[in-house]
Length: 418
Image 1 (cartoon, helix red, strand yellow):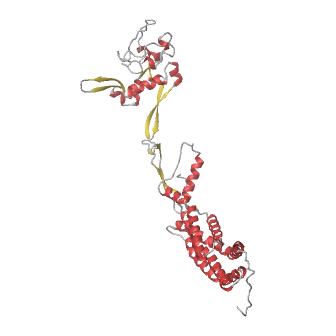
Image 2 (tube, rainbow, N blue to C red):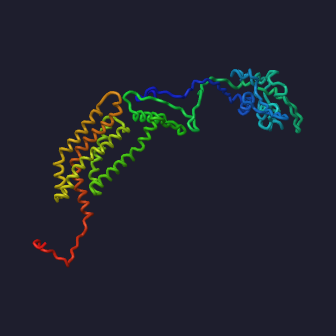
Image 3 (spheres, rainbow, N blue to C red):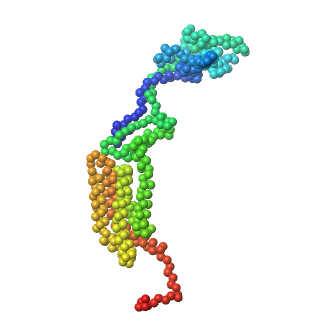
């Protein structure tokens, strides 16, 4: 995101500079020595996980007995190499003792890493020779007797140093993990670069996110101003439809007709197409300000149709003209006021479209949408509105014309006697 020209001051709350020690297990060597990964986990939990091994009860209180290493063995990761791991008896032993699993052979007095039988290993291997003080008496040197064969063994000879099959690696980990809801989240903040719009920045971010091909488990979303911007764009279609419905109702009440409000609204598509073409040519986004410009065009452009339709309907009703003659006279007489009002609005939008300075990137889409919509609509509506008026007028007369019947008992009187 720092490479996007639309963004500036990109920062994140993800802090991955924390140091951590990772214990890497050589699984091949551990398996050869008869040590299962669960044995290593249990031993490390005995040493550093505060395992509760017993509860002491008194007359008033009860006390939990916790198993852990000495405090001086918890000061450095290097102390991990002083630990010794008991081998798993099921790895290479034979007899009744070898058939028992590791989980079922643990001793409650010494933790989950105590074993009851020895494992077959090579006596000459130096890694299997634990020092005499590796496991204290009573902690790992318990002895048990089997009823099947009275073989007594000690677990001290089965201790393998942790350094024989593991090593430490220095890695980095996050210092803190933030959450949004129930999921871990990372926040990336940014400012807009000079002469950059928020809509263009959001489009660039979404394109960069698609190029990363992130898995489905990783989701992204905007917060703050960007989220409000997206929310406003999601309702722009309903906003335009509501404006058109309001205009249609007002015009229908004004002209007492269901047909001619559609004639007036027919001037709006050309204005919308012109505004969109102008935004595309000048590489502007359809932002909230551009939507405001399109809604503004609804009020400016439809006055062309209102001037022509109003004069044509008056000619039909007051002077008895047909639709063709009425709309023709309306175009001739209303041409000058249409041009005056259109040029006034167009010239007012040019400073918004070409202006420079502070905040000009916010006002520019408004001016471009106004100028483009007015230019195209002015050229087209002078030709399309008369045609649509005549077409809808014929449709209106066809559906509203009722068959007239004359009563044979009534005869028309001469004009002199009326």
